Length: 370
Image (cartoon, rainbow, N blue to C red):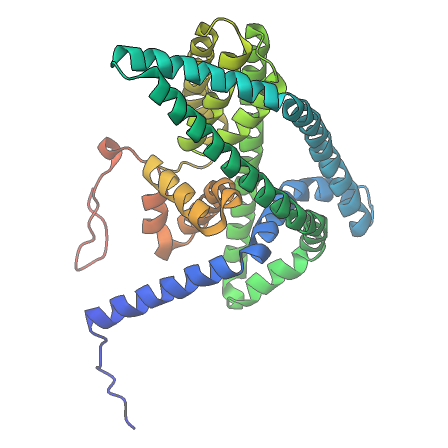
């Protein structure tokens, strides 16, 4: 059968193929999430540890020994932070029944007061509160049970992380060689340069996120300790981690210490103090910390950030929310360094509308007009 060289796919066929391809790709990401999520986490950790491995190898240490030393230092830091958080969570869980009872009483008083304003019978309000509390307890028990199952299965993933990290670092030369072999020899230098730039910027970006998280956590812990709020370390660190999730994380991060302030302090105005201080910290983070430390490396616009976080949650759950921005940042770096993908990198960026200058190509020379 002879194929017409002048045959062109109609537009509807091209769109259909693209949509089918996107559907298959997203479906594969969802199906293989139990494999990809720990692998992506391991890849990010390996990128962070790679400079340490290179530094140790300068002292003529064996590659395996250098990797093991770097991993030991990295996981020692992670274990220290985790141990501190676990001790705080343990204290919080012991006090949870008392806090829950106080929160229930506070909500009951507030609802009763509101019912009086709107002329609703207090008995009806109390019945509604009792029913709601029972449903909440049942749902909470179900969530805790599911969480225990998730943690049990998650232990396998946690045990896989060190293995993934070690193998990625060990086979790094092989992975780079594989990428180079995808291109012709005359492109080797250009590809090496792109890989080096992307690796450097990703490392700076991830280090920037870590520094930002550390500064925000310190500010929040100091503020909560100053106000005398219980579990300041846990709430401060948790708030800083949630701060990595744009917009949504900030709301949840401030809601938790406000709830603790309401039930642990006799004066409800402490919740307002927490809100004000967290708002000031958020202003400092958005206007000084992020632009100087993080955004100077990679800028992602707010629309893409929100869509990426929601898509990450739909695809991979809570881990996907945390991984969404680093993945988008890596994609933007690749797009920016590949000429044919530059428009997509521009779309992901945070260029202000008044800074955009249209530069259409001329039909004859292909040059741009300013």
